[in-house]
Length: 248
Image (cartoon, rainbow, N blue to C red):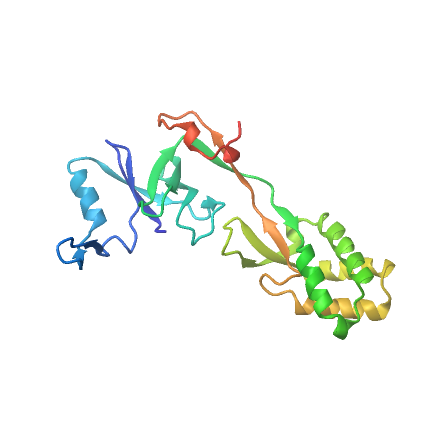
């Protein structure tokens, strides 16, 4: 989406310009069954509709976009924050049917970011280690021990211990992170309680080979968010907001 949003102060209507605003639409000519091109200019239509009204330009705050829907999902509900230089507003963007245009509305909520959650890709790690058994001589029992050790180790990590290295196309609130070099070696030292030196070297090679972008050894970094009601002059039907997002 674009970095600028326009708001009519008189009607409180929101318009978000995109590169698709002047793309034509197509209607079927019922007479001969052919497609008829219809020219469009959504921003010009917005300005005509609100002619004589005061239009305010709002800047989207970088990094404020929050959603549980994949970027490519047409039917969705997203939240972001904008500012006029003085106040910060939360905007809800949604669409309930694929045939509808995206709608925008200022809502009486603050976006609250929860503490990031670090978790390992347990099942994917096991599958990859099984696939590499011939190379690294991993047994099922050893794989189970490794995953258990890794899960326990990651549960005690801080954000400073990992390096973000990839993002999910399916969830905007999910990214991937790898252990920094020092932390990786600390983990391998901990593995000495269950693995011999040869096995440790095999584990080091496995970790090094599977630490790019969203590879199996990398950690899933989840950033939960919630909506907290605030007292502002804008009115909205709270029942229309996804209930699992609202706190307070």
